[in-house]
Image (tube, rainbow, N blue to C red; front, side):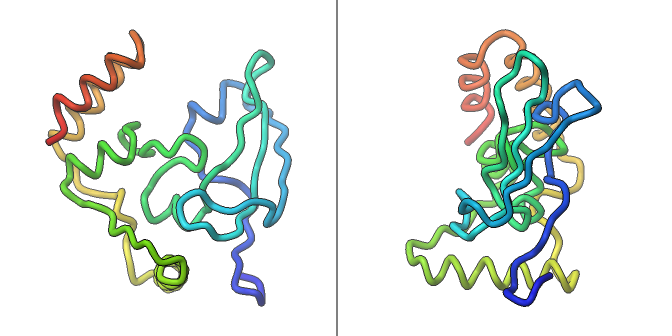
Length: 160
């Protein structure tokens, strides 16, 4: 951690789908160039091309938010089950506390970052195996191979 309180990172937290099939990926790193879409703090952006025919992908969430929620920094899907984080949270019944105040969001983000560094908190995404999550992940995988519309319908049939 640097003097300004910002964490330096060498590699993003990315799922295999976003990383692509090529084991030799050339990444561009832009330190503190954009703000996190979740907590609005400055973050290091990584940009790469996963395949020869693919478009460039880049990180949209900071590493602290990705660690706390156990999600990919690019697609914001759960790393363990491959589900959208909103669907996973609704199945588990854990709603994220959203605050409207910018100052309150900054305070919460700083407290969570300190807790992660001290090792006093666990990320909310790492949970014991849940049958509902496994069933939703299987349904989402089958539906995603057919179309995105079926994924949307299957999620709402499982989610309360």
